[in-house]
Length: 419
Ligand SMILES: *Cc1c(COP(=O)(O)O)cnc(C)c1O
Image (cartoon, rainbow, N blue to C red; front, side, top):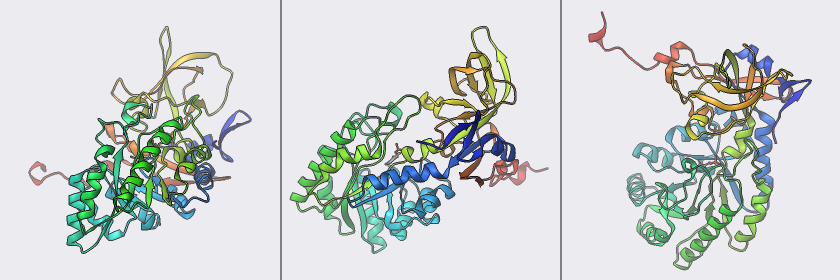
């Protein structure tokens, strides 16, 4: 479900023509739909109604402060993986008791900040980290609330780069070793055990891996309880996929229907950490065709957006649907959409049958609301692009396009080089 639709052959974001935004703000530009973001969040909230739960949006998917504020205003929590994300979540008004903190490399400073903020819990990824958190908490005369991230060794059947729950993954603790680690944690007076965390991967399009992993986690929770280790929270991570092309990922309500029976009678508080399934289809990247290069077999459309703006195609060979902002009935040609970056891997789409693109045409790269802007960079010294939020008939710039001034912000020329 999303709010990017054609009306009279023109692509609209909610009630606003995409071309109008491109004209006002320039291209490339990320456009998000307020209604899509909100309805994706509400789909989760409704699906788990009746089960004590917190939905902690994974900030790494989209951390624009306006997007976070929108979610915060509606009761959403946050899954953060850095001090920067913690800062943004708090700044957006997400209450600390709805913030969970994952990540394999939390620094001392980040741990101190999270303890000061009073977050719900740390999702700990190694015994070294457990020791560090315990020591820091002791020094601060605090008790650190924790869950251990266990690795249930489930194949999520997704891209290897976004699969995190297999044995050989750098994330979490092998589930067979969990009891031992929890026993260790229990001995630390400055740690307070709250729950179990798992996250098996991303863009998962079937229910089975979630069910299989959760069964293992619930079994572990029961074992831990029988050893006097309190487990109140089960954090099942994120990972529900979205339709990029012709996938049919389950709706949050199907997920809840499959997993709530497993939780029944366990008296668990459930945490979910969706990222992509909230923001992915709520955003598009709009780019303009600069030049065309005709080859005998196909056409290269050189666009003003590149891998620095949206890296998923280059990084994961990810598929993003491409739509013309103004429909036309020109002849279909096989086209590659390539960016201006000096890398052969700089493409947003390959071998697509598109109506012939002309110079100046606007193209919408769909499903770009998650892992789009957050993964963007200044590579080739390109200023990062603007972000716009559409609500009904109105649109709002929620991040200015960077300027050349931003390219030197914070950098300095040492005296000896000055003349
Ligand atoms: C990336 C990540 C998420 C979000 O994953 P999605 O596939 O975007 O839902 C949630 N939890 C953790 C620990 C993550 O690393």
